Picture 1 (cartoon, rainbow, N blue to C red):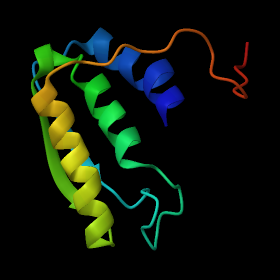
Picture 2: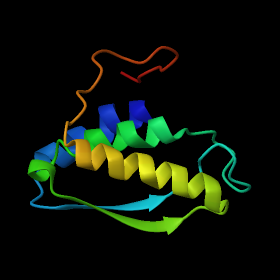
Picture 3: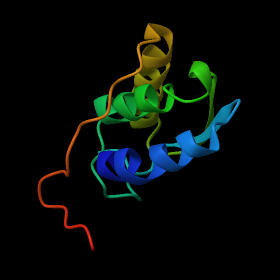
Length: 104
């Protein structure tokens, strides 16, 4: 998720230069959700939120839209809101993530 965000989504979004970012905040990929099976943590969602805040001068709307374990969803969304309230965009990692192969 972080590699896709850092290497694909953010560079494209930066080139577009949006005035506002609206993100679907679905948490079915969270650890403990019965459907997604991706094992993302609240900290992972918070890190993605911080990165999205680097766009549009930090003007970010999270629209809650998914997640099928209310306890997990509430923890993940709380982590995202805390990241937004902290208002400190997280810098991207440099280089290629371990295990990722890029085509030439």
